[in-house]
Amino acid sequence: MVREVTATSNGFFFFQFKTAAAMEEVIEGGPWLFQGQPIVLQKWEPGMVLRKLQHTQVPVWIKLRHLPVELWTTEGLSTVASGIGKPLYPDAITRACTRLDFARVCIMLDISSKLPKHIVIMVPHDDGGETACKVDVEYEWLPPKCTACMSLGHSTKGSHDETKTTSRFRLRAETECQP
Image (cartoon, rainbow, N blue to C red; front, side, top):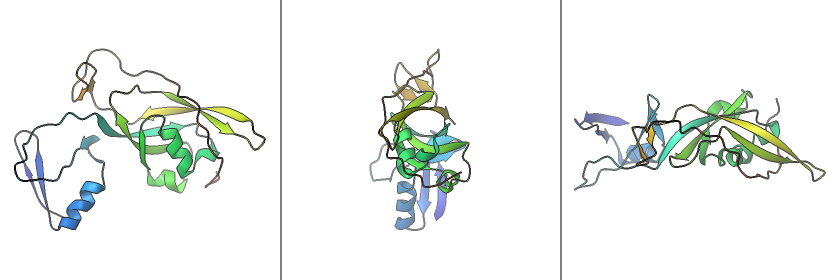
């Protein structure tokens, strides 16, 4: 797939692919992480200036603990994860429902957003009632973030980890897997 990798002194890498299709597959298949750090891929074009971009979003894996079984669906996981960021995809073990201690989902996180430790989900009952379920959120990795300039790579002093409870979600209770 990759024919050659070339590095520059200012932290950029050039990947030469064997085919254009392989290059497109890699670019569209992201987000990509190297040693837990996000890699931003961009197709090279003539005249492109090599400078670090100011990114406002980064892919992050989250673990959702105490997730009700009826939310172990594509729709349920997506709805819960959307309380944190833009849901991208669950890991293979979560998709297969072979580990029910937590669901692991990759999301696109806006670095300017608060980082909730919990999300409250309102799960509907057949009789029209609802039950409030508190889902704990664990971030596997967070980039250093400066709240003064809103850029990644360095941080300001103080804690940026805050707790918030999101507004009520309504889900159709469909179970794709049973414990």
